[in-house]
Length: 168
Image (cartoon, rainbow, N blue to C red; front, side, top):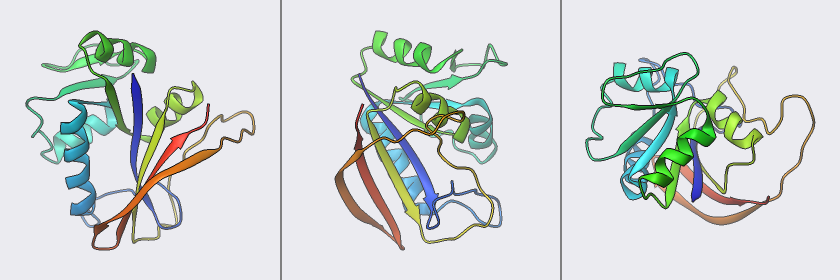
């Protein structure tokens, strides 16, 4: 199964932190919806999922959503997995060829740390934030991974998408 890590970053490399005063760029949200529809699924962390629900992000009726959480065991109508591998196993059993990993930072870092990411899809928003979260391959040890640029394109309004293959 191919796994794609999808994220929106700021121009200075941090995760883009959205808020009511600084909402996500429409172009990035539209791309997320298109990627989720193409994959037929997405994997998300509990806190990010709760944030999506609070902001009215419930337009995914025909998409398998898997929430990875070690603290929450049940969410009505949503599959909960205890680990990244368990989430991938579930989607593979459902017949999916691709898994879309959408957030948040802890979930992304867990997938990266376990070598479970095949591709990276970064939407770089035209903003700079002084505080933010970063992607980490391994929090305890310096690691270096080569990536290969597969594609890049403008999504509009200054949002650029970079698509990489991850060297394993």
